[in-house]
Length: 132
Image (tube, rainbow, N blue to C red):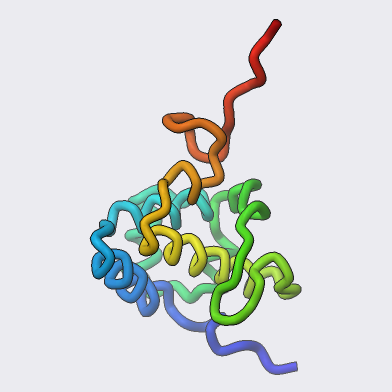
């Protein structure tokens, strides 16, 4: 089976489109960076580095410091596909990133986008249940 051409596309090729989409809707590059870093574990310097080096999406995800364990909570439709039903792990990760950027552009709250349980809690965490 032929590999999908998106796998060899440079992150630097899609990143400006993500930022433009968010900015058209009044959101910022910082918010796009935040969701990408949340998903992949890259920090801002690491993200800037892979963009500058023209790293392809396959390598970007293969070398990601840590795909967020809460990424599996990302659901919905992007490009006509339900992200939770995509079987190819790399394609699913790419579509997760698309979905997160889409949610930023649609104006969702960051706590919702980052699948956090409590406003102000670190991304990917939730508050412990109250003790009796």
